[in-house]
Image (tube, rainbow, N blue to C red; front, side, top):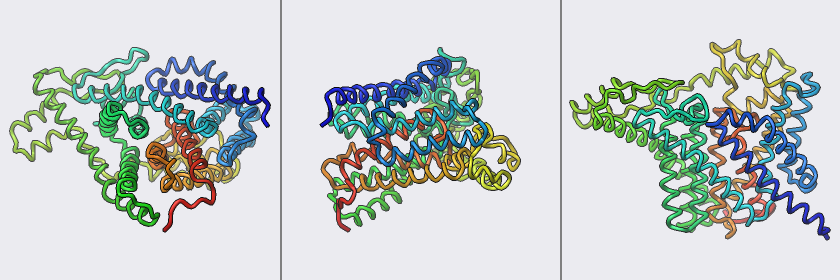
Length: 485
């Protein structure tokens, strides 16, 4: 029997863990457009709060930790050991990097240590924070794309949003990062749609999701759009399971394959449609306002599209037939196709360069040296490997890489069990959490955030991973068979 004082202490820890991580989550999201304020927060409160959270977890949670948590703990311990092996004896160089990654992994505990009723309430809070902050950015971004009016950021010397090379930069951050934010918001909205049956909430969720979908289309982030399309296809399969009352696992697999083949491409094509419609709105706005200076204002960081550029489209639209008009209005068209944008040479260089420093396969390297061996093989400088697993291989060596792979496999098993579960506890809201994961992992195959940094992208992944694992343990215990082939 647990003593009353221990039970009370654990209850207080659960509240502190949830609130503390929610504060860091909110601050990380706000850092997207208030980096100066985030810097001040990070100098003191982030370090103090993060240290307290990790310490409390060691005191109250590590004893009852699940295997997935132990794998992440092992990864963090190896991360420290590998720094020491790289002669960073006192973590003076990579200490903050280790702390950031450890704190990112802490987000796995948000849902894993809470009972079901508290878990959903906390998830709601995280979802609302994400949606409010980033949908605000999406609205400003769409406004900027259509009108060309660039809104200065009152908290930092940059623009709130801007267009460059026909791509939307939300809060003046990288377009691929912006696309990932929109992806996260879309599927938090899917979760809330199934979580609440109130018609007003559902209508608002759909309209907000369409806004974020349009903003994602304007970022032209192919990794996020591909991930989103696959996840939307999985959502259509999940709906088919429910409304067609498909019970057998074999039929579910066939339904999923059909959804990926049909709904997946249609969802991806929808992004082109969203960009096209936004282009029409931009041209119509220019034509209706007859303003010579529309889009002429220069962003402090990136130039906006010029009035002459849009005027040429307006003129073409007025002097051509319907088909050519449709084409001329597509001012935000992405012509990159399947161009790898330099990623394949990076991957080749990342693998080939290991022979120049083979000891890196065992001990990894310091963060600032991750790209040092690869750069001689490349024609330009890159900040990272554009692949989270390749980044981890260089950063932590094979031991860290294997721990990351082990965690990924275990998470995949939990996700599959939960997605195909027939349990009445696995409702649509719970199953919708699985939809985040394919998009996150596709994104991290082409970008770097997972196990490498502490930002909104990485902590969102661990938050959702913890929720999926927790529900899998609750709903699909080991050895349970939910359906028959």
